[in-house]
Image (cartoon, rainbow over all chains, first blue to last red; front, side, top):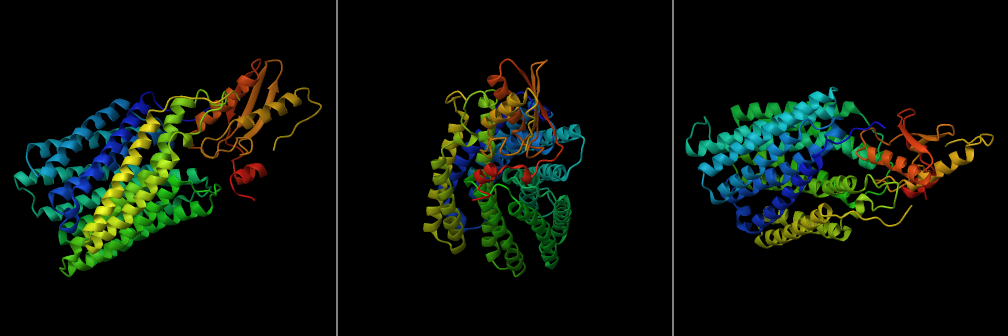
Length: 428
Length: 112
């Protein structure tokens, strides 16, 4: 029997990342509930900065780190280089996030913000080194590896620019204003880290979960080069000239790359063997729709920015909410239930499977809670996003409550899974 | 679909072992590995008291691959304690939709 086995200790480090991320998601929902009025103003303000970093680091990045440690055997077809480096990265990611988010929330741009930024930078570099050494060990070059390693490098650059911005608060040394670098920092994080990661991972997992035979590498290669070209052009052009007429053309190149990826997903869905799409996969498919909605905001942002219209601030905020709290969150809310139950199941039942009747991975969580979570999240998306769009405090409040319910049901289900006790039914 | 030679003395045991593998369920698809067409061959070596299974997976990157192979081995060792079991993972012929039995397709919702 020859398949890629997990290294000892990967389970503990993976589950720790999932639990940390779930708790951060709960904290994030609480922070949003206490910051309703912040979503009707400018995005460059303490509450929004704190919420964005909790969402991007404590929630999105933390769970992606954990999932990577588990999925490298699938995606890079080799075992993780070092579990110790994974623990080291987590040990700096958690205090770094807490410190940075607290400093943003209270807006005290001093030592805690700087310590947080530096801890996060070292954590991210450690993670990238671990993934690089794992990929080197794998030996063979795949398009998924290109996506993933590019994503990791972008995350390092995001953290470097972020750290520079933090230190610039107390001793201005950057050549241009904070908002100018904030745009680069945000796009490196959102478009590069999250987008390239999502494409790299999902291009392996979606065909597998849907049991699709579609394997067109050229579509993914076209997607990779178009997106990378658009990102490099955007970073260089917007650093020198800011948003301008050329930004439309750069956006078209990027959207063409995304279209190639979406075409790949569409073909996987069309050629799937598994006809029933379960709730976690529906969550993932919703995330692609939300991603499309985020893309629709781009021309509005460029247009209103160039027209010097204040609406560009509103659309930028909505763009960020749709991508972070819509696209990324929906994807995680779904994919948690396509990964964590299997991770826990292997731990409890791999040695028993075939000998006695065991529960299936999908039996390890409460489906009723997952249904409530999905419904609450749908209410959040509609209510919160429209609330921000039409400046309605009531809709924002309804959305915040729905997000709290989403987080509570998600957190309970995560704990149900990780506290699962081995049980068998009867002899086969 | 496997063939059985009725002149072979181990044919009955081979058929029985093949049917026993229906107890192994793919944890993601919830369909047994025989109806998914993952089991290519079962051979019985009476002198060595060995059951050899040749099987594949629906995807070479399947994260549950090791579990499915272990489950097949566990299942046969439990039901045929006199025999040792060896499970070989093979990639030729490549698994496809056509390998799924009518019952498997029905369970996957592919055919009414």
